[in-house]
Length: 230
Image (cartoon, rainbow, N blue to C red; front, side, top):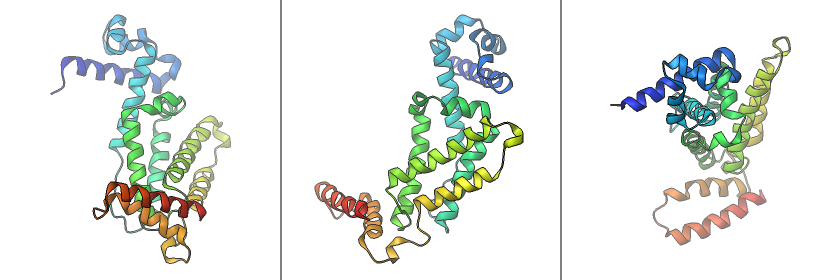
């Protein structure tokens, strides 16, 4: 059961999010948040240190909320359709929570949060599944960066535009560009050449128990070279 301090902290975060949603970042002052939460301003400093600490906690709450809403299919029937759905979910979250999303993603320091890192692990898991099936055109890490950058860029660009200049084609165009950049139309392991097979085998290495740690590291290095050559 949450402690009294935890419940108070959550009430303050929710009050800050409400102010952020209704009035933007400038509306989130320690005095306004304290009043909305039914507290005295010094309580904010005791709980969060300062306004930046409060904003960090709000961003962390946003990352945690987004993570909780993710659906992960460990064995999707169509990996590319699953990739598109994951991208769409990220964009839809940003459009549904514009002020919170902007706070979460416009300051690099906030992407060091525990919930953000957990969300990236979910994304990397999807990349490993794509790689093991021979779908990835690029390295797993680069693929994850491209996916994250295009979704974030799409949302922040949309939010920065006047309403009369917003074209929904921005999302479909960026999503399909992302899919083309990181995946093959067919699994590369069915094609001739070592690169796709090397990526697929390297993705499966952590699950192999027949090799020692040293053997896996050495084989991973060799496979990495083959993947890069492709």
